[in-house]
Image 1 (cartoon, rainbow, N blue to C red):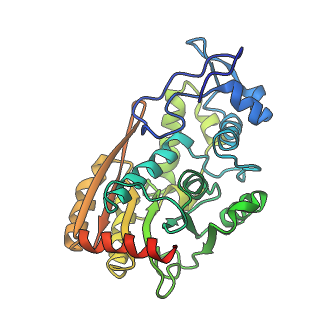
Image 2 (image 1 turned 180 degrees about the vertical axis):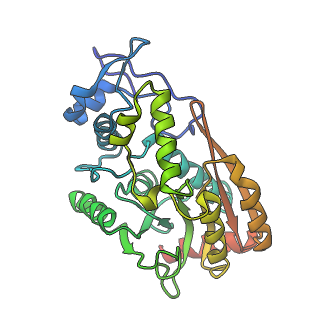
Image 3 (image 1 turned 90 degrees about the vertical axis):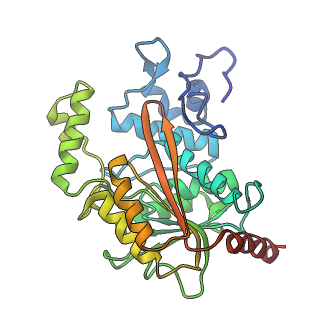
Length: 325
């Protein structure tokens, strides 16, 4: 974003973000408040003197997200129910930009854009973030699956507030909490990629303790951590934690070897990688990639795998392009 004439300078840039990320230069709070006036009351001067918000305040973070989506992506009426995860927009956008680069590997380095690209967001959540940004940036079509009825209703409300998105983004209820692709991927259906932000913790208690640690680092009390504890069960924890969830995803992906060009998932902890790579080798994936990402001091990554040889993936790109001509 560019600096608004006569307004305060943007917040400091976020190192490590993808070069196509709209938020890599930092936040232009003057432009954001103009796009979403509700952010205004939350803007304050940070220690370095630049405008910012209190990132420990859930209402402020939600207002920032609403403004970012309005100003950068033209999304209106974005909201989430109380207690649901409020995702960091720059980091979520980064995943999508790196996915675009991954798809470009099968298209002679050309980033594929438009409705020919179909993506499945496993666990789309109440916020609908990945389909919103992915469609606005690249014009891809998305299917979002969700187990939680309240989250699905929230995502439907966001779509209803943005009528132009309905033709590109569809939502499906996952009724089997033990399944990820089964019951969502329809017979004969193909996707260019899947993406997922898996639950990280192995139990709700583990998730709460992590939240309390975060709040202590922010100089806040444990009581405040309990009041502002964000995220529902399926968003935060599952049996086996992150590594267990991804292993289940890999086992299901084996049953769809020629229906998805690239399966992908975020991996929050580097400690999960050995188990994930071992499971992928056991599943005999043809291509396994770990793509690093960063947002400031936070290091992250996603793992991608395919059961198709490179030649078959390239052929699927040409077929999809031909179908849309």
